[in-house]
Image (cartoon, helix red, strand yellow):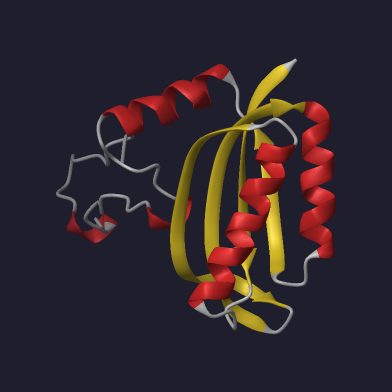
Length: 141
């Protein structure tokens, strides 16, 4: 059965631009060779890591969304593990809601935003001392 997946992988920051593109092409070609259909691809660029991985604090992030048979995932992840340029990866199967969300974002002309780039609107800090007698804090804040 064909399912829809997305994989995000982090490449080591010491790669040149050409080496980075070559690495991405390697995995894109691997997916296509095994019958996967690339639905969407997004390069997130150099990002700071939440914690050091292999003594590195930054990495090049890349996302590939694709449709494939289940066994293709095993092949892809084995190749991720064998490639020293990849410092971390995550592949997830998308449910129908995630697929619809991604399609909607692309239809609006927006790229699917990486979770690290999401900005939550700031809610003003309200101190208990700022409340007037009889006022109560809003439960929704």
